[in-house]
Image 1 (cartoon, rainbow, N blue to C red):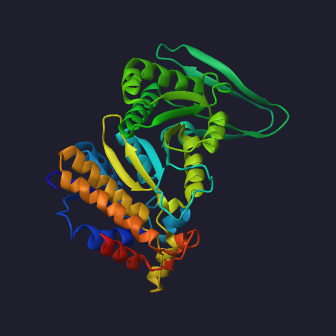
Image 2 (image 1 turned 60 degrees about the vertical axis):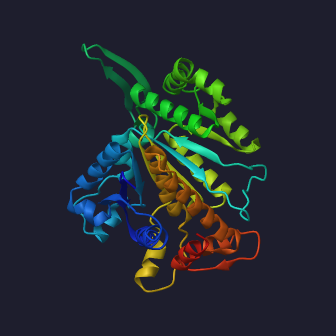
Image 3 (image 1 turned 90 degrees about the horizontal axis):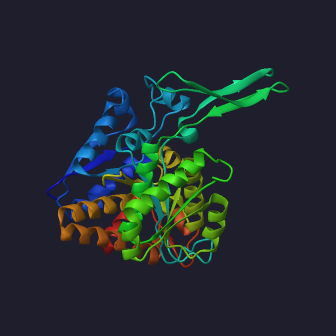
Length: 393
Protein backbone atom coordinates (compact mmCIF):
# COMPACT_ATOMS: atom_id res chain seq x y z
CA UNK A 1 0.00 0.00 0.00
CA UNK A 2 1.61 3.22 -1.19
CA UNK A 3 -1.06 5.67 -0.02
CA UNK A 4 -2.17 5.34 3.61
CA UNK A 5 -5.68 4.59 4.81
CA UNK A 6 -6.80 6.88 7.62
CA UNK A 7 -7.32 4.52 10.57
CA UNK A 8 -9.68 5.76 13.29
CA UNK A 9 -9.69 3.70 16.47
CA UNK A 10 -12.65 3.66 18.84
CA UNK A 11 -14.11 2.42 22.10
CA UNK A 12 -15.00 -0.59 24.25
CA UNK A 13 -15.52 -4.05 22.72
CA UNK A 14 -15.17 -2.84 19.14
CA UNK A 15 -11.74 -1.44 20.06
CA UNK A 16 -10.71 -4.94 21.20
CA UNK A 17 -12.06 -6.47 17.98
CA UNK A 18 -10.29 -3.75 15.96
CA UNK A 19 -6.87 -4.77 17.29
CA UNK A 20 -7.63 -8.47 16.81
CA UNK A 21 -8.69 -7.98 13.17
CA UNK A 22 -5.43 -6.21 12.41
CA UNK A 23 -3.39 -8.88 14.18
CA UNK A 24 -5.18 -11.96 12.82
CA UNK A 25 -6.60 -10.97 9.42
CA UNK A 26 -4.59 -8.07 8.02
CA UNK A 27 -0.94 -7.81 9.05
CA UNK A 28 -0.03 -11.45 8.20
CA UNK A 29 -1.21 -10.91 4.60
CA UNK A 30 -0.66 -7.29 3.54
CA UNK A 31 1.72 -4.40 4.14
CA UNK A 32 -0.76 -2.32 6.12
CA UNK A 33 -0.10 1.40 5.70
CA UNK A 34 -2.33 3.55 7.90
CA UNK A 35 -2.36 7.02 9.39
CA UNK A 36 -3.60 6.35 12.94
CA UNK A 37 -5.99 8.49 14.99
CA UNK A 38 -7.22 7.44 18.43
CA UNK A 39 -10.86 8.52 18.83
CA UNK A 40 -11.27 6.58 22.06
CA UNK A 41 -13.28 8.69 24.47
CA UNK A 42 -10.35 9.37 26.80
CA UNK A 43 -8.20 10.71 23.95
CA UNK A 44 -11.01 12.85 22.60
CA UNK A 45 -11.33 14.33 26.07
CA UNK A 46 -7.56 14.79 26.39
CA UNK A 47 -7.34 16.62 23.04
CA UNK A 48 -10.56 18.63 23.56
CA UNK A 49 -11.93 16.64 20.60
CA UNK A 50 -9.33 18.13 18.26
CA UNK A 51 -8.33 14.59 17.24
CA UNK A 52 -11.75 14.08 15.63
CA UNK A 53 -11.30 17.13 13.44
CA UNK A 54 -7.77 16.06 12.51
CA UNK A 55 -9.03 12.60 11.50
CA UNK A 56 -11.70 14.10 9.24
CA UNK A 57 -9.18 16.45 7.63
CA UNK A 58 -6.88 13.49 7.00
CA UNK A 59 -9.69 11.67 5.14
CA UNK A 60 -10.17 14.79 3.01
CA UNK A 61 -6.44 14.65 2.17
CA UNK A 62 -5.96 10.92 1.56
CA UNK A 63 -9.43 9.98 0.32
CA UNK A 64 -10.11 6.78 2.32
CA UNK A 65 -10.69 6.17 6.02
CA UNK A 66 -11.85 3.27 8.17
CA UNK A 67 -13.44 3.91 11.55
CA UNK A 68 -14.07 1.82 14.66
CA UNK A 69 -17.30 2.40 16.61
CA UNK A 70 -17.09 5.24 19.13
CA UNK A 71 -19.03 6.45 22.16
CA UNK A 72 -21.17 9.57 21.96
CA UNK A 73 -21.21 10.49 25.65
CA UNK A 74 -24.36 11.20 27.65
CA UNK A 75 -24.45 12.45 31.23
CA UNK A 76 -23.76 8.96 32.61
CA UNK A 77 -20.69 8.57 30.37
CA UNK A 78 -19.36 11.98 31.46
CA UNK A 79 -19.35 10.70 35.04
CA UNK A 80 -18.05 7.22 34.15
CA UNK A 81 -15.08 8.55 32.18
CA UNK A 82 -14.61 11.75 34.21
CA UNK A 83 -14.90 13.89 31.07
CA UNK A 84 -14.44 17.63 30.79
CA UNK A 85 -17.75 17.95 28.92
CA UNK A 86 -20.34 16.02 26.93
CA UNK A 87 -18.43 15.82 23.65
CA UNK A 88 -20.45 15.66 20.40
CA UNK A 89 -20.87 12.62 18.19
CA UNK A 90 -17.62 11.90 16.31
CA UNK A 91 -19.67 10.62 13.39
CA UNK A 92 -21.62 13.89 13.29
CA UNK A 93 -18.42 15.94 13.34
CA UNK A 94 -16.80 13.89 10.57
CA UNK A 95 -19.99 13.95 8.47
CA UNK A 96 -20.17 17.73 8.73
CA UNK A 97 -16.52 18.22 7.73
CA UNK A 98 -16.76 15.83 4.78
CA UNK A 99 -20.27 17.03 3.84
CA UNK A 100 -20.99 13.33 3.41
CA UNK A 101 -23.93 11.00 2.93
CA UNK A 102 -24.15 7.71 4.84
CA UNK A 103 -24.84 4.56 2.78
CA UNK A 104 -25.78 1.43 4.73
CA UNK A 105 -26.13 -2.02 3.19
CA UNK A 106 -26.81 -5.48 4.68
CA UNK A 107 -24.27 -8.29 4.42
CA UNK A 108 -26.21 -11.23 3.02
CA UNK A 109 -25.09 -14.77 3.81
CA UNK A 110 -26.55 -18.19 3.01
CA UNK A 111 -28.39 -19.59 6.00
CA UNK A 112 -29.60 -16.23 7.31
CA UNK A 113 -32.69 -15.34 5.34
CA UNK A 114 -34.36 -11.89 5.31
CA UNK A 115 -37.60 -11.69 7.27
CA UNK A 116 -39.20 -10.33 4.08
CA UNK A 117 -39.12 -13.51 1.99
CA UNK A 118 -39.05 -11.82 -1.43
CA UNK A 119 -35.89 -9.79 -0.67
CA UNK A 120 -33.21 -11.53 -2.71
CA UNK A 121 -30.69 -8.68 -3.09
CA UNK A 122 -29.39 -6.06 -0.62
CA UNK A 123 -31.21 -2.74 -0.21
CA UNK A 124 -28.88 0.20 0.38
CA UNK A 125 -30.10 3.08 2.54
CA UNK A 126 -28.66 6.52 1.74
CA UNK A 127 -29.21 8.82 4.71
CA UNK A 128 -28.87 12.59 4.46
CA UNK A 129 -26.92 13.04 7.66
CA UNK A 130 -27.42 16.78 8.12
CA UNK A 131 -30.05 19.07 9.59
CA UNK A 132 -33.72 18.39 10.28
CA UNK A 133 -34.47 17.44 13.91
CA UNK A 134 -30.79 16.58 14.54
CA UNK A 135 -29.93 20.30 14.34
CA UNK A 136 -33.24 21.64 15.63
CA UNK A 137 -34.15 24.29 18.15
CA UNK A 138 -36.86 23.33 20.65
CA UNK A 139 -38.89 25.15 23.27
CA UNK A 140 -41.55 24.20 25.78
CA UNK A 141 -44.42 26.65 25.42
CA UNK A 142 -46.73 27.82 28.19
CA UNK A 143 -50.47 28.21 27.77
CA UNK A 144 -51.35 31.68 26.50
CA UNK A 145 -48.26 31.95 24.30
CA UNK A 146 -48.15 32.46 20.55
CA UNK A 147 -45.32 30.98 18.49
CA UNK A 148 -44.20 32.84 15.37
CA UNK A 149 -41.57 31.87 12.77
CA UNK A 150 -39.48 34.96 12.01
CA UNK A 151 -36.88 35.33 9.25
CA UNK A 152 -34.77 38.47 8.80
CA UNK A 153 -33.01 38.62 5.41
CA UNK A 154 -29.70 40.27 4.58
CA UNK A 155 -31.31 43.65 3.91
CA UNK A 156 -33.16 43.66 7.22
CA UNK A 157 -36.56 42.73 5.79
CA UNK A 158 -38.58 40.66 8.26
CA UNK A 159 -40.99 37.90 7.29
CA UNK A 160 -43.23 36.33 9.93
CA UNK A 161 -45.57 33.35 9.91
CA UNK A 162 -47.63 32.14 12.82
CA UNK A 163 -46.83 28.59 13.93
CA UNK A 164 -49.55 28.14 16.56
CA UNK A 165 -51.48 30.04 19.19
CA UNK A 166 -51.27 28.11 22.49
CA UNK A 167 -54.23 29.94 24.04
CA UNK A 168 -55.82 26.79 25.46
CA UNK A 169 -52.91 24.54 26.38
CA UNK A 170 -49.20 24.25 27.09
CA UNK A 171 -47.20 22.68 24.28
CA UNK A 172 -43.90 22.34 22.46
CA UNK A 173 -42.38 23.81 19.29
CA UNK A 174 -39.48 22.74 17.09
CA UNK A 175 -37.57 24.71 14.48
CA UNK A 176 -35.70 22.80 11.75
CA UNK A 177 -33.52 23.85 8.87
CA UNK A 178 -31.59 22.59 5.88
CA UNK A 179 -29.55 24.27 3.16
CA UNK A 180 -29.66 24.07 -0.61
CA UNK A 181 -25.90 23.35 -0.56
CA UNK A 182 -26.27 20.36 1.77
CA UNK A 183 -29.25 18.97 -0.13
CA UNK A 184 -27.35 19.29 -3.42
CA UNK A 185 -24.33 17.51 -1.92
CA UNK A 186 -26.66 14.75 -0.69
CA UNK A 187 -28.19 14.42 -4.15
CA UNK A 188 -24.84 14.21 -5.95
CA UNK A 189 -23.48 11.67 -3.46
CA UNK A 190 -26.55 9.50 -4.05
CA UNK A 191 -26.45 9.82 -7.84
CA UNK A 192 -22.72 9.02 -7.88
CA UNK A 193 -23.03 6.04 -5.51
CA UNK A 194 -25.93 4.46 -7.42
CA UNK A 195 -24.08 5.00 -10.69
CA UNK A 196 -20.98 3.37 -9.22
CA UNK A 197 -22.84 0.23 -8.14
CA UNK A 198 -25.15 0.35 -11.19
CA UNK A 199 -28.35 0.19 -9.16
CA UNK A 200 -31.60 2.15 -9.44
CA UNK A 201 -31.95 5.12 -7.09
CA UNK A 202 -35.17 5.85 -5.23
CA UNK A 203 -35.77 9.07 -3.31
CA UNK A 204 -38.71 9.72 -0.99
CA UNK A 205 -40.03 12.56 1.18
CA UNK A 206 -43.51 13.82 2.11
CA UNK A 207 -43.83 16.85 -0.17
CA UNK A 208 -47.63 16.62 -0.27
CA UNK A 209 -47.65 17.66 3.40
CA UNK A 210 -44.40 19.65 3.59
CA UNK A 211 -45.02 21.75 0.50
CA UNK A 212 -41.96 23.98 0.94
CA UNK A 213 -39.41 22.11 3.11
CA UNK A 214 -39.69 18.60 1.66
CA UNK A 215 -40.60 19.92 -1.78
CA UNK A 216 -37.25 21.71 -1.90
CA UNK A 217 -35.50 18.34 -1.57
CA UNK A 218 -37.59 16.94 -4.41
CA UNK A 219 -36.87 19.92 -6.70
CA UNK A 220 -33.11 19.95 -6.09
CA UNK A 221 -32.83 16.20 -6.73
CA UNK A 222 -34.81 16.53 -9.95
CA UNK A 223 -32.84 19.54 -11.22
CA UNK A 224 -29.48 17.87 -10.60
CA UNK A 225 -30.60 14.59 -12.17
CA UNK A 226 -31.96 16.23 -15.31
CA UNK A 227 -28.95 18.53 -15.78
CA UNK A 228 -26.06 16.29 -14.70
CA UNK A 229 -26.93 12.59 -14.52
CA UNK A 230 -29.83 11.66 -16.82
CA UNK A 231 -27.66 10.72 -19.81
CA UNK A 232 -25.23 8.72 -17.65
CA UNK A 233 -28.10 6.80 -16.03
CA UNK A 234 -29.60 5.97 -19.41
CA UNK A 235 -26.20 4.76 -20.61
CA UNK A 236 -25.78 2.59 -17.48
CA UNK A 237 -29.29 1.17 -17.85
CA UNK A 238 -30.45 2.34 -14.41
CA UNK A 239 -33.22 4.69 -13.32
CA UNK A 240 -33.96 7.43 -10.79
CA UNK A 241 -37.42 8.08 -9.51
CA UNK A 242 -39.11 10.06 -6.74
CA UNK A 243 -42.06 8.90 -4.67
CA UNK A 244 -43.74 9.72 -1.37
CA UNK A 245 -42.17 8.11 1.73
CA UNK A 246 -45.30 6.05 2.51
CA UNK A 247 -45.47 4.78 -1.07
CA UNK A 248 -41.75 4.00 -0.94
CA UNK A 249 -42.19 1.86 2.18
CA UNK A 250 -44.89 -0.18 0.43
CA UNK A 251 -42.73 -0.55 -2.68
CA UNK A 252 -39.71 -1.62 -0.62
CA UNK A 253 -41.67 -4.41 1.08
CA UNK A 254 -42.96 -5.69 -2.27
CA UNK A 255 -39.59 -5.46 -4.03
CA UNK A 256 -36.86 -8.08 -4.40
CA UNK A 257 -34.17 -5.55 -3.40
CA UNK A 258 -31.14 -4.48 -5.36
CA UNK A 259 -31.51 -0.68 -5.29
CA UNK A 260 -30.41 2.43 -3.39
CA UNK A 261 -33.07 4.16 -1.27
CA UNK A 262 -32.28 7.79 -0.47
CA UNK A 263 -33.96 9.23 2.64
CA UNK A 264 -33.91 12.45 4.61
CA UNK A 265 -32.06 12.40 7.93
CA UNK A 266 -34.77 11.08 10.28
CA UNK A 267 -36.29 8.73 7.70
CA UNK A 268 -32.87 7.24 6.97
CA UNK A 269 -32.08 6.85 10.67
CA UNK A 270 -35.26 4.84 11.25
CA UNK A 271 -35.38 2.88 8.00
CA UNK A 272 -31.74 1.76 8.19
CA UNK A 273 -32.43 0.03 11.52
CA UNK A 274 -35.61 -1.50 10.13
CA UNK A 275 -33.73 -2.89 7.13
CA UNK A 276 -30.85 -4.13 9.31
CA UNK A 277 -33.25 -6.10 11.51
CA UNK A 278 -35.27 -7.41 8.57
CA UNK A 279 -32.11 -8.61 6.81
CA UNK A 280 -30.90 -10.38 9.94
CA UNK A 281 -28.75 -8.30 12.30
CA UNK A 282 -27.41 -4.78 12.84
CA UNK A 283 -24.03 -6.46 13.28
CA UNK A 284 -24.33 -7.53 9.62
CA UNK A 285 -24.79 -4.00 8.26
CA UNK A 286 -22.04 -2.04 6.52
CA UNK A 287 -21.82 1.75 6.54
CA UNK A 288 -19.82 4.09 4.33
CA UNK A 289 -19.75 7.89 4.41
CA UNK A 290 -19.31 9.32 0.91
CA UNK A 291 -18.58 12.99 0.22
CA UNK A 292 -19.75 14.64 -3.01
CA UNK A 293 -16.09 15.03 -4.11
CA UNK A 294 -15.35 11.32 -3.67
CA UNK A 295 -13.91 10.81 -0.17
CA UNK A 296 -14.84 7.62 1.69
CA UNK A 297 -15.05 6.58 5.34
CA UNK A 298 -16.00 2.95 6.11
CA UNK A 299 -17.32 1.67 9.45
CA UNK A 300 -19.69 -0.83 11.02
CA UNK A 301 -23.26 0.37 11.45
CA UNK A 302 -23.47 -0.74 15.10
CA UNK A 303 -22.15 0.71 18.36
CA UNK A 304 -19.38 -0.21 20.78
CA UNK A 305 -21.08 -3.33 22.26
CA UNK A 306 -20.84 -2.07 25.85
CA UNK A 307 -22.37 -5.14 27.51
CA UNK A 308 -19.79 -7.48 26.00
CA UNK A 309 -16.98 -5.08 26.93
CA UNK A 310 -17.91 -5.21 30.61
CA UNK A 311 -17.86 -9.03 30.39
CA UNK A 312 -14.45 -8.85 28.70
CA UNK A 313 -13.09 -6.64 31.50
CA UNK A 314 -14.22 -9.24 34.05
CA UNK A 315 -12.40 -11.97 32.13
CA UNK A 316 -15.65 -13.61 31.06
CA UNK A 317 -15.92 -15.17 27.58
CA UNK A 318 -17.53 -13.12 24.82
CA UNK A 319 -18.99 -14.05 21.45
CA UNK A 320 -19.13 -10.67 19.71
CA UNK A 321 -20.00 -10.39 16.03
CA UNK A 322 -17.11 -8.78 14.14
CA UNK A 323 -18.44 -9.18 10.59
CA UNK A 324 -19.45 -5.55 9.98
CA UNK A 325 -16.08 -4.36 11.29
CA UNK A 326 -14.25 -6.84 9.04
CA UNK A 327 -16.27 -5.51 6.09
CA UNK A 328 -15.43 -1.94 7.09
CA UNK A 329 -11.76 -2.83 6.69
CA UNK A 330 -12.34 -4.76 3.44
CA UNK A 331 -14.35 -1.87 2.03
CA UNK A 332 -11.61 0.63 2.82
CA UNK A 333 -8.89 -1.69 1.46
CA UNK A 334 -10.85 -2.26 -1.76
CA UNK A 335 -11.44 1.46 -2.29
CA UNK A 336 -7.77 2.23 -1.58
CA UNK A 337 -6.82 -0.42 -4.12
CA UNK A 338 -9.24 0.96 -6.72
CA UNK A 339 -8.01 4.53 -6.30
CA UNK A 340 -4.34 3.46 -6.41
CA UNK A 341 -4.80 0.93 -9.24
CA UNK A 342 -3.62 -1.82 -6.87
CA UNK A 343 -5.31 -4.97 -8.15
CA UNK A 344 -3.69 -7.18 -5.50
CA UNK A 345 -5.19 -5.13 -2.68
CA UNK A 346 -8.64 -5.26 -4.29
CA UNK A 347 -8.31 -9.02 -4.65
CA UNK A 348 -7.33 -9.38 -0.99
CA UNK A 349 -10.39 -7.37 0.10
CA UNK A 350 -12.61 -9.67 -1.97
CA UNK A 351 -11.00 -12.80 -0.49
CA UNK A 352 -11.33 -11.46 3.06
CA UNK A 353 -15.07 -11.00 2.59
CA UNK A 354 -15.46 -14.40 0.92
CA UNK A 355 -13.58 -16.10 3.76
CA UNK A 356 -15.81 -14.37 6.33
CA UNK A 357 -19.01 -15.46 4.61
CA UNK A 358 -17.66 -18.99 4.04
CA UNK A 359 -16.94 -19.30 7.76
CA UNK A 360 -20.54 -18.50 8.66
CA UNK A 361 -21.98 -20.67 5.89
CA UNK A 362 -19.90 -23.59 7.16
CA UNK A 363 -21.72 -23.26 10.51
CA UNK A 364 -19.07 -21.43 12.56
CA UNK A 365 -20.35 -18.14 13.97
CA UNK A 366 -20.86 -15.91 16.98
CA UNK A 367 -23.82 -16.38 19.31
CA UNK A 368 -26.09 -13.71 17.81
CA UNK A 369 -25.98 -15.37 14.39
CA UNK A 370 -26.38 -18.89 15.79
CA UNK A 371 -29.82 -17.82 17.05
CA UNK A 372 -31.06 -16.96 13.53
CA UNK A 373 -29.03 -19.36 11.36
CA UNK A 374 -31.02 -21.90 9.33
CA UNK A 375 -28.89 -24.98 9.78
CA UNK A 376 -26.44 -26.63 12.12
CA UNK A 377 -24.21 -24.07 13.83
CA UNK A 378 -21.30 -23.96 16.24
CA UNK A 379 -21.10 -20.93 18.51
CA UNK A 380 -17.54 -19.66 18.98
CA UNK A 381 -15.93 -16.84 20.91
CA UNK A 382 -14.98 -13.42 19.58
CA UNK A 383 -11.35 -14.23 18.82
CA UNK A 384 -12.09 -17.83 17.78
CA UNK A 385 -14.35 -16.57 15.00
CA UNK A 386 -11.57 -14.37 13.62
CA UNK A 387 -9.17 -17.31 13.76
CA UNK A 388 -11.69 -19.43 11.82
CA UNK A 389 -11.92 -16.69 9.18
CA UNK A 390 -8.12 -16.62 8.98
CA UNK A 391 -8.12 -20.37 8.42
CA UNK A 392 -10.46 -19.98 5.46
CA UNK A 393 -8.52 -16.98 4.19
